[in-house]
Amino acid sequence: MTLEWEQVIVDTRDPQMLGRWWAEALGWVIVDDEDGVEIRPSEDRLPGLLFGNDPSAKQVKNRLHLDFRPDDQDAEVERLLAHGARHADVGQTGDEPWVVLLDPEGNEFCVLSSRRGA
Image (cartoon, rainbow, N blue to C red):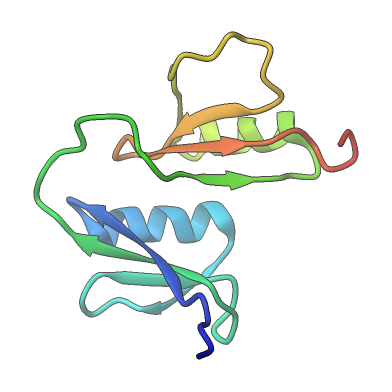
């Protein structure tokens, strides 16, 4: 049996808004926006993210989150904050080499230490 990782599903109250937010934040393309919004790094590249409709509000810390390793952590955090992300407090000590942010619906994601500093 062979498996290919197709996508990660993100439940959201507003798939159109959040899918487009992430597409812009990552510089990815929207490959489908009929039943939710599917985005990928490029049309033919996997895995992608699929934003599906779930009317319930997020209530607790995500059990699964995305990590991103940038070339420049400080610049990337500032860019994402300007794009509408917010800082998150999930119990960090302040000594972590990553920054925890929230997307517009409150989903946590991390910006790891810079590639050139790693």
